[in-house]
Length: 391
Image (cartoon, rainbow, N blue to C red; front, top):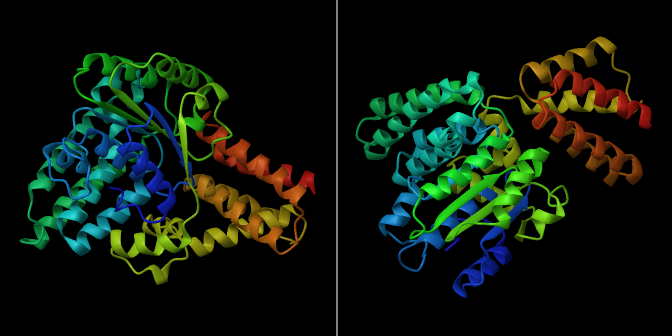
Protein backbone atom coordinates (compact mmCIF):
# COMPACT_ATOMS: atom_id res chain seq x y z
CA UNK A 1 0.00 0.00 0.00
CA UNK A 2 1.02 3.63 -0.63
CA UNK A 3 3.45 2.51 -3.35
CA UNK A 4 2.15 5.19 -5.71
CA UNK A 5 2.87 8.01 -3.23
CA UNK A 6 6.19 9.57 -4.20
CA UNK A 7 8.20 10.90 -1.27
CA UNK A 8 6.98 11.03 2.34
CA UNK A 9 8.38 7.56 3.07
CA UNK A 10 8.31 8.04 6.84
CA UNK A 11 4.71 9.27 6.90
CA UNK A 12 3.55 6.47 4.60
CA UNK A 13 5.27 3.89 6.81
CA UNK A 14 3.54 5.30 9.88
CA UNK A 15 0.17 5.26 8.12
CA UNK A 16 0.69 1.66 7.06
CA UNK A 17 1.56 0.64 10.62
CA UNK A 18 -1.46 2.46 12.05
CA UNK A 19 -3.75 0.70 9.54
CA UNK A 20 -2.24 -2.76 10.02
CA UNK A 21 -2.49 -2.45 13.81
CA UNK A 22 -6.07 -1.13 13.48
CA UNK A 23 -5.02 2.00 15.38
CA UNK A 24 -6.31 4.50 12.86
CA UNK A 25 -8.99 6.79 14.37
CA UNK A 26 -12.21 7.66 12.59
CA UNK A 27 -11.04 11.18 11.70
CA UNK A 28 -7.73 12.20 10.14
CA UNK A 29 -6.17 15.45 9.00
CA UNK A 30 -3.63 15.45 6.18
CA UNK A 31 -1.97 18.81 5.69
CA UNK A 32 0.79 20.28 3.58
CA UNK A 33 1.33 22.27 0.39
CA UNK A 34 -1.13 21.84 -2.46
CA UNK A 35 1.04 19.60 -4.64
CA UNK A 36 2.41 17.46 -1.82
CA UNK A 37 0.18 14.47 -2.61
CA UNK A 38 -2.50 15.10 0.03
CA UNK A 39 -5.49 14.00 -2.06
CA UNK A 40 -3.66 10.97 -3.48
CA UNK A 41 -2.76 9.91 0.06
CA UNK A 42 -6.33 10.42 1.27
CA UNK A 43 -7.75 8.33 -1.58
CA UNK A 44 -5.27 5.55 -0.94
CA UNK A 45 -6.17 5.50 2.77
CA UNK A 46 -9.83 5.27 1.77
CA UNK A 47 -9.15 2.38 -0.62
CA UNK A 48 -7.09 0.43 1.91
CA UNK A 49 -9.68 0.89 4.67
CA UNK A 50 -12.45 -0.32 2.36
CA UNK A 51 -10.54 -3.16 0.67
CA UNK A 52 -12.17 -6.58 0.88
CA UNK A 53 -8.73 -8.17 1.31
CA UNK A 54 -5.62 -6.66 2.89
CA UNK A 55 -5.24 -3.42 0.95
CA UNK A 56 -2.20 -4.26 -1.15
CA UNK A 57 -1.42 -1.83 -3.93
CA UNK A 58 -1.89 -4.59 -6.51
CA UNK A 59 -5.24 -5.74 -5.13
CA UNK A 60 -7.83 -6.31 -7.87
CA UNK A 61 -10.88 -6.92 -5.68
CA UNK A 62 -14.10 -5.19 -6.87
CA UNK A 63 -13.85 -2.57 -4.12
CA UNK A 64 -10.32 -1.56 -5.07
CA UNK A 65 -11.23 -1.43 -8.74
CA UNK A 66 -14.11 0.94 -7.97
CA UNK A 67 -11.89 3.09 -5.78
CA UNK A 68 -9.23 3.44 -8.46
CA UNK A 69 -11.80 4.95 -10.81
CA UNK A 70 -13.60 6.75 -7.94
CA UNK A 71 -16.89 5.01 -8.61
CA UNK A 72 -17.32 3.39 -5.21
CA UNK A 73 -20.82 4.17 -3.87
CA UNK A 74 -19.64 4.67 -0.28
CA UNK A 75 -16.91 7.22 -1.05
CA UNK A 76 -17.58 10.96 -0.95
CA UNK A 77 -14.97 13.48 -2.10
CA UNK A 78 -15.63 17.17 -1.55
CA UNK A 79 -12.92 19.46 -2.92
CA UNK A 80 -13.77 22.98 -4.06
CA UNK A 81 -10.73 24.51 -5.78
CA UNK A 82 -9.28 25.07 -9.23
CA UNK A 83 -8.93 21.54 -10.60
CA UNK A 84 -8.07 22.53 -14.16
CA UNK A 85 -4.25 22.43 -13.84
CA UNK A 86 -4.29 18.75 -12.81
CA UNK A 87 -7.05 17.86 -15.28
CA UNK A 88 -5.22 19.45 -18.23
CA UNK A 89 -2.00 17.68 -17.21
CA UNK A 90 -3.79 14.34 -16.86
CA UNK A 91 -5.41 14.83 -20.27
CA UNK A 92 -2.01 15.45 -21.86
CA UNK A 93 -0.62 12.34 -20.14
CA UNK A 94 -3.51 10.24 -21.46
CA UNK A 95 -2.98 11.45 -25.02
CA UNK A 96 0.66 10.45 -24.73
CA UNK A 97 0.48 7.12 -22.89
CA UNK A 98 -2.99 5.80 -23.85
CA UNK A 99 -2.74 3.03 -21.25
CA UNK A 100 -5.03 2.01 -18.42
CA UNK A 101 -3.00 3.80 -15.73
CA UNK A 102 -3.13 7.10 -17.63
CA UNK A 103 -6.85 6.61 -18.24
CA UNK A 104 -7.49 6.07 -14.52
CA UNK A 105 -5.43 9.15 -13.66
CA UNK A 106 -7.56 11.30 -15.97
CA UNK A 107 -10.86 9.83 -14.78
CA UNK A 108 -9.91 10.20 -11.11
CA UNK A 109 -8.77 13.78 -11.56
CA UNK A 110 -12.01 14.78 -13.27
CA UNK A 111 -14.19 12.88 -10.80
CA UNK A 112 -12.54 14.63 -7.86
CA UNK A 113 -13.83 17.87 -9.35
CA UNK A 114 -17.28 16.35 -9.94
CA UNK A 115 -17.61 15.40 -6.27
CA UNK A 116 -19.18 18.77 -5.44
CA UNK A 117 -21.95 18.05 -7.97
CA UNK A 118 -23.36 14.93 -6.34
CA UNK A 119 -27.18 15.01 -6.31
CA UNK A 120 -27.18 15.22 -2.50
CA UNK A 121 -25.72 18.74 -2.74
CA UNK A 122 -28.04 20.23 -5.34
CA UNK A 123 -30.49 21.76 -2.87
CA UNK A 124 -27.60 23.48 -1.05
CA UNK A 125 -26.14 25.00 -4.22
CA UNK A 126 -26.89 28.59 -5.26
CA UNK A 127 -29.68 28.79 -7.82
CA UNK A 128 -27.28 30.10 -10.46
CA UNK A 129 -25.10 26.99 -10.08
CA UNK A 130 -27.80 24.31 -10.25
CA UNK A 131 -27.47 23.91 -14.03
CA UNK A 132 -23.89 22.76 -13.48
CA UNK A 133 -25.17 19.57 -11.84
CA UNK A 134 -26.75 18.41 -15.10
CA UNK A 135 -23.56 19.22 -17.00
CA UNK A 136 -21.52 17.33 -14.40
CA UNK A 137 -23.79 14.32 -14.91
CA UNK A 138 -23.10 14.43 -18.65
CA UNK A 139 -19.35 14.47 -17.98
CA UNK A 140 -19.71 11.48 -15.68
CA UNK A 141 -21.45 9.50 -18.42
CA UNK A 142 -18.61 10.31 -20.81
CA UNK A 143 -16.10 9.11 -18.23
CA UNK A 144 -17.92 5.77 -18.05
CA UNK A 145 -17.59 5.47 -21.83
CA UNK A 146 -13.92 6.41 -21.62
CA UNK A 147 -13.25 3.74 -19.00
CA UNK A 148 -14.41 1.03 -21.43
CA UNK A 149 -12.76 2.51 -24.52
CA UNK A 150 -9.60 1.19 -26.17
CA UNK A 151 -7.77 4.44 -26.85
CA UNK A 152 -4.79 2.71 -28.46
CA UNK A 153 -6.95 1.07 -31.13
CA UNK A 154 -8.21 4.32 -32.64
CA UNK A 155 -6.08 7.38 -31.91
CA UNK A 156 -8.41 9.89 -33.58
CA UNK A 157 -11.53 8.59 -31.81
CA UNK A 158 -9.66 8.57 -28.50
CA UNK A 159 -8.56 12.16 -28.92
CA UNK A 160 -12.13 13.18 -29.74
CA UNK A 161 -13.36 11.55 -26.52
CA UNK A 162 -10.73 13.33 -24.45
CA UNK A 163 -11.41 16.67 -26.18
CA UNK A 164 -15.15 16.31 -25.64
CA UNK A 165 -14.70 15.68 -21.93
CA UNK A 166 -12.22 18.53 -21.51
CA UNK A 167 -14.51 20.96 -23.32
CA UNK A 168 -17.35 20.23 -20.90
CA UNK A 169 -15.02 20.15 -17.89
CA UNK A 170 -13.72 23.65 -18.64
CA UNK A 171 -17.27 25.02 -18.69
CA UNK A 172 -18.15 23.39 -15.37
CA UNK A 173 -14.86 24.36 -13.76
CA UNK A 174 -15.32 28.01 -14.69
CA UNK A 175 -18.50 28.14 -12.64
CA UNK A 176 -17.13 26.41 -9.57
CA UNK A 177 -16.54 28.51 -6.47
CA UNK A 178 -13.60 27.77 -4.20
CA UNK A 179 -15.35 27.47 -0.85
CA UNK A 180 -17.66 24.83 0.60
CA UNK A 181 -21.07 26.30 1.57
CA UNK A 182 -22.36 25.29 4.98
CA UNK A 183 -25.30 23.53 3.31
CA UNK A 184 -22.91 21.06 1.71
CA UNK A 185 -21.50 20.08 5.10
CA UNK A 186 -24.98 19.63 6.53
CA UNK A 187 -25.95 17.43 3.60
CA UNK A 188 -23.03 15.12 4.31
CA UNK A 189 -25.05 13.93 7.30
CA UNK A 190 -28.04 13.38 5.01
CA UNK A 191 -25.91 11.18 2.75
CA UNK A 192 -24.42 9.23 5.66
CA UNK A 193 -27.82 8.47 7.15
CA UNK A 194 -29.11 7.39 3.74
CA UNK A 195 -26.32 4.81 3.30
CA UNK A 196 -25.95 1.52 5.11
CA UNK A 197 -23.90 1.24 8.31
CA UNK A 198 -23.00 -2.29 7.24
CA UNK A 199 -20.41 -0.82 4.87
CA UNK A 200 -17.54 1.51 5.64
CA UNK A 201 -18.28 5.00 4.37
CA UNK A 202 -15.35 7.35 3.70
CA UNK A 203 -15.72 11.13 3.46
CA UNK A 204 -12.80 13.16 2.13
CA UNK A 205 -13.10 16.93 2.53
CA UNK A 206 -10.46 19.31 1.21
CA UNK A 207 -9.95 22.89 2.37
CA UNK A 208 -11.07 22.61 5.99
CA UNK A 209 -8.64 25.43 6.83
CA UNK A 210 -10.56 27.75 4.47
CA UNK A 211 -14.06 27.08 5.80
CA UNK A 212 -16.15 29.97 7.06
CA UNK A 213 -17.40 29.86 10.66
CA UNK A 214 -20.76 28.28 9.83
CA UNK A 215 -19.17 25.46 7.83
CA UNK A 216 -16.60 24.88 10.60
CA UNK A 217 -19.34 24.60 13.21
CA UNK A 218 -21.32 22.14 11.07
CA UNK A 219 -18.18 20.05 10.50
CA UNK A 220 -17.48 20.05 14.23
CA UNK A 221 -20.97 18.82 14.98
CA UNK A 222 -20.50 15.86 12.63
CA UNK A 223 -17.14 14.98 14.18
CA UNK A 224 -18.58 15.20 17.70
CA UNK A 225 -21.33 12.69 16.90
CA UNK A 226 -20.10 10.66 13.92
CA UNK A 227 -22.32 7.90 12.53
CA UNK A 228 -21.08 4.34 12.88
CA UNK A 229 -18.57 2.87 10.43
CA UNK A 230 -17.51 6.20 8.90
CA UNK A 231 -13.99 7.50 8.30
CA UNK A 232 -13.39 11.21 7.79
CA UNK A 233 -10.23 12.40 6.05
CA UNK A 234 -9.78 16.17 6.15
CA UNK A 235 -7.25 17.94 3.93
CA UNK A 236 -5.68 21.33 4.57
CA UNK A 237 -2.68 23.42 3.68
CA UNK A 238 -2.07 24.73 7.17
CA UNK A 239 -2.76 23.15 10.54
CA UNK A 240 -2.53 26.31 12.62
CA UNK A 241 -5.56 27.93 10.95
CA UNK A 242 -7.91 25.13 12.05
CA UNK A 243 -9.77 25.64 15.32
CA UNK A 244 -8.51 23.59 18.31
CA UNK A 245 -11.85 21.84 18.84
CA UNK A 246 -11.55 20.21 15.41
CA UNK A 247 -7.86 19.45 15.85
CA UNK A 248 -8.64 17.67 19.12
CA UNK A 249 -10.86 15.22 17.20
CA UNK A 250 -8.44 14.25 14.44
CA UNK A 251 -5.04 12.62 14.10
CA UNK A 252 -2.73 14.71 11.94
CA UNK A 253 -0.23 13.65 9.29
CA UNK A 254 2.04 16.25 7.72
CA UNK A 255 3.23 15.97 4.13
CA UNK A 256 6.25 18.25 3.84
CA UNK A 257 8.28 19.33 0.85
CA UNK A 258 9.46 16.63 -1.54
CA UNK A 259 11.54 18.37 -4.24
CA UNK A 260 13.38 15.22 -5.33
CA UNK A 261 10.14 13.23 -5.64
CA UNK A 262 8.44 15.91 -7.75
CA UNK A 263 10.57 14.94 -10.75
CA UNK A 264 9.32 11.36 -10.39
CA UNK A 265 5.71 12.54 -10.35
CA UNK A 266 6.22 14.54 -13.54
CA UNK A 267 8.01 11.74 -15.39
CA UNK A 268 6.29 8.60 -14.10
CA UNK A 269 2.76 9.83 -13.52
CA UNK A 270 2.37 12.54 -16.17
CA UNK A 271 4.87 11.19 -18.74
CA UNK A 272 6.58 14.54 -19.20
CA UNK A 273 10.19 15.70 -18.96
CA UNK A 274 11.00 16.91 -15.43
CA UNK A 275 13.99 18.85 -16.79
CA UNK A 276 11.57 21.39 -18.26
CA UNK A 277 10.12 22.41 -14.90
CA UNK A 278 11.58 23.50 -11.57
CA UNK A 279 8.61 22.21 -9.53
CA UNK A 280 5.17 20.61 -9.72
CA UNK A 281 3.69 24.07 -9.23
CA UNK A 282 5.42 25.25 -12.41
CA UNK A 283 4.45 22.06 -14.24
CA UNK A 284 0.74 22.43 -13.54
CA UNK A 285 0.83 26.17 -14.20
CA UNK A 286 2.34 25.60 -17.65
CA UNK A 287 -0.28 22.92 -18.42
CA UNK A 288 -2.93 25.52 -17.71
CA UNK A 289 -1.43 27.70 -20.44
CA UNK A 290 0.07 30.32 -18.12
CA UNK A 291 3.40 31.95 -18.91
CA UNK A 292 5.34 31.28 -15.69
CA UNK A 293 8.17 33.62 -16.63
CA UNK A 294 5.81 36.53 -17.22
CA UNK A 295 3.95 35.80 -13.99
CA UNK A 296 7.26 35.77 -12.11
CA UNK A 297 8.38 39.04 -13.68
CA UNK A 298 5.05 40.67 -12.84
CA UNK A 299 5.29 39.50 -9.22
CA UNK A 300 8.85 40.86 -8.95
CA UNK A 301 7.90 44.27 -10.37
CA UNK A 302 4.89 44.45 -8.07
CA UNK A 303 6.73 43.37 -4.90
CA UNK A 304 10.00 45.24 -5.43
CA UNK A 305 8.17 48.47 -6.27
CA UNK A 306 6.04 48.13 -3.14
CA UNK A 307 9.24 47.53 -1.15
CA UNK A 308 10.68 50.74 -2.71
CA UNK A 309 13.53 48.79 -4.33
CA UNK A 310 12.46 49.30 -7.90
CA UNK A 311 10.80 52.13 -9.78
CA UNK A 312 7.93 50.82 -11.87
CA UNK A 313 5.41 53.24 -13.40
CA UNK A 314 2.07 53.32 -11.64
CA UNK A 315 0.35 52.45 -14.93
CA UNK A 316 2.38 49.21 -15.16
CA UNK A 317 1.47 48.20 -11.61
CA UNK A 318 -2.19 48.82 -12.41
CA UNK A 319 -1.86 46.72 -15.56
CA UNK A 320 -0.33 43.86 -13.56
CA UNK A 321 -3.19 43.98 -11.05
CA UNK A 322 -5.79 44.08 -13.82
CA UNK A 323 -4.26 41.12 -15.70
CA UNK A 324 -3.88 38.98 -12.59
CA UNK A 325 -7.54 39.53 -11.70
CA UNK A 326 -8.86 39.10 -15.25
CA UNK A 327 -7.00 35.83 -15.81
CA UNK A 328 -7.93 34.47 -12.37
CA UNK A 329 -4.29 34.09 -11.40
CA UNK A 330 -4.47 35.76 -7.99
CA UNK A 331 -3.66 32.61 -6.03
CA UNK A 332 -0.69 31.81 -8.30
CA UNK A 333 0.41 35.44 -8.10
CA UNK A 334 0.45 35.28 -4.29
CA UNK A 335 2.43 32.04 -4.48
CA UNK A 336 5.05 33.75 -6.65
CA UNK A 337 5.28 36.68 -4.25
CA UNK A 338 5.75 34.25 -1.36
CA UNK A 339 8.52 32.44 -3.25
CA UNK A 340 10.31 35.70 -4.08
CA UNK A 341 9.98 36.84 -0.48
CA UNK A 342 11.56 33.63 0.81
CA UNK A 343 14.50 34.11 -1.55
CA UNK A 344 14.93 37.71 -0.41
CA UNK A 345 15.03 36.62 3.23
CA UNK A 346 17.60 33.91 2.44
CA UNK A 347 19.78 36.52 0.71
CA UNK A 348 19.46 38.91 3.64
CA UNK A 349 17.64 41.54 1.59
CA UNK A 350 14.41 41.41 3.60
CA UNK A 351 14.24 41.06 7.38
CA UNK A 352 12.42 38.15 8.99
CA UNK A 353 10.11 40.59 10.74
CA UNK A 354 9.03 42.30 7.51
CA UNK A 355 8.67 38.96 5.73
CA UNK A 356 6.37 37.64 8.47
CA UNK A 357 4.23 40.79 8.21
CA UNK A 358 3.87 40.39 4.45
CA UNK A 359 3.15 36.66 4.71
CA UNK A 360 0.37 37.43 7.21
CA UNK A 361 -1.05 39.93 4.74
CA UNK A 362 -0.91 37.35 1.94
CA UNK A 363 -2.64 34.75 4.10
CA UNK A 364 -5.34 37.24 5.04
CA UNK A 365 -5.98 38.32 1.44
CA UNK A 366 -5.98 34.76 0.13
CA UNK A 367 -8.65 33.89 2.69
CA UNK A 368 -10.70 36.93 1.67
CA UNK A 369 -10.49 35.80 -1.96
CA UNK A 370 -11.31 32.13 -1.36
CA UNK A 371 -13.77 32.31 1.54
CA UNK A 372 -15.44 35.70 1.14
CA UNK A 373 -15.09 36.08 -2.66
CA UNK A 374 -13.77 39.63 -2.44
CA UNK A 375 -12.58 40.99 -5.78
CA UNK A 376 -9.06 39.94 -6.72
CA UNK A 377 -8.19 43.32 -8.27
CA UNK A 378 -9.19 45.15 -5.10
CA UNK A 379 -7.28 42.66 -2.95
CA UNK A 380 -4.13 42.91 -5.10
CA UNK A 381 -4.24 46.70 -4.90
CA UNK A 382 -4.81 46.56 -1.15
CA UNK A 383 -1.83 44.24 -0.67
CA UNK A 384 0.41 46.55 -2.66
CA UNK A 385 -0.34 49.53 -0.43
CA UNK A 386 -0.15 47.46 2.76
CA UNK A 387 3.33 46.22 1.82
CA UNK A 388 4.44 49.76 0.95
CA UNK A 389 3.14 51.03 4.29
CA UNK A 390 5.02 48.29 6.19
CA UNK A 391 8.41 49.23 4.73
